Amino acid sequence: MSIFKDMLKSNETIFKNPIALDYDFIPKIMPFREGEQRTIISAIMPMLQGRNGRNLFISGLPGIGKTLATKKVLEELEEETDEVIPIYINCWNKNTTYKILTSIAEQINYPFTQNKKTEELMKIIKERINQNSAVFVFDEIDKAEDLDFLYMLLEEIYKSSIILITNYKEWIIKLEDRIKSRLMPQHIEFKPYNLEETKKILEERAKIAFYQNVIDEEIINLIAQKTYKAKDIRRGLYLLKEAGNNAEENSRKKIIKEDVEKAEEKTIDFKIKKTEELKEEEKKILEIIKNNEGKKIGQLYELYKETTKEEISYKTFQRRIAKLEQGKYITVKALTGGKEGRTSIIFYNTN
Ligand SMILES: Nc1ncnc2c1ncn2[C@@H]1O[C@H](COP(=O)(O)OP(=O)(O)OP(=O)(O)O)[C@@H](O)[C@H]1O
Ligand SMILES: [Mg+2]
Picture 1 (cartoon, rainbow, N blue to C red):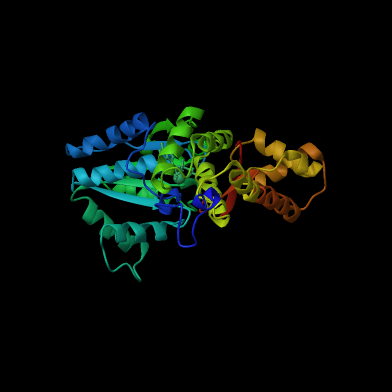
Picture 2 (picture 1 turned 90 degrees about the horizontal axis):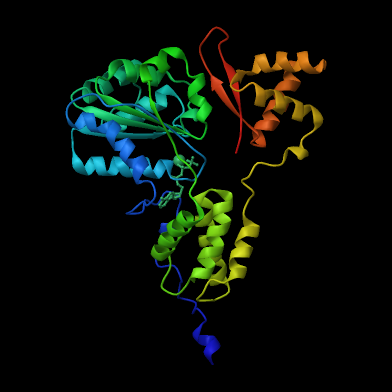
């Protein structure tokens, strides 16, 4: 009755440590990004000698270790010294100067952030951090709705390293001059992993996540292939976890090919839809955006009318832009301040 031997009992699991497949799990070692981590460290290094740090601009496709590499450096820094304060902020959820300064104040253990004005928060931050120095990481910086906080930090903090991370390399070009000229960052571009690297990374995670003999090399290879194609390690982590769940659902002690295939069917298609699915006029707008990176929405509207001669209201144009954004063909970044008050600038999504 060897079939029963391979069956999982109802109280058994194939997952030794399922958390290892979470996207924000921080593994002990991070292979293949030593060079990038060294560059980050060398920007911070001067502060360990009491000097000012350098600023960095990190870009690259989703899911290739930008956040992890930076977080690992912050972790090491914390072990190494108390002189340089590590601050990490994801601008996706902290997307205004006020929210960002509140979060910084909290991270430096200032307990009374409630009901404080922006200026008051900045004063507290300045007084505390200027006794030492700090590394500020602003992840997903393109999601920040205004950049006053950057200007303030650049002006008022004596010794710091400011690290900006984004998927959009072009973001830096459109940065307003008063910030750009103070920031002068060194650029690091993260490149996607090759097939071998992808496999090694997933293999390591699988080793932590599953018990022995749950996943064979053949299955790792299959998942690595699919992940390499997507150029996104998260795809692999997702497939590992879902394939594992599928095996468990079928009371199997081993993950098989079908479990991976079934997991893949479940994947929501993160990828950008094909341009064929767009209407003619939407394609036209996309084309104009592609050739005019980072223009304001009003300027694009004028360009569209000029090239197509179509009588179209601004409202309709805005609706089409919203649709392109929803389909992830473009990224819309809100800008505040300036002569026109609130406006949006538009980027073409290459990946
Ligand atoms: N070299 C590596 N070793 C181990 N795990 C890695 C490595 N590179 C990436 N990962 C894992 O892949 C996942 C995605 O990495 P990360 O979150 O750093 O991507 P990212 O480049 O910041 O993506 P995004 O631009 O979408 O934020 C994480 O779970 C991370 O732990
Ligand atoms: Mg990230």
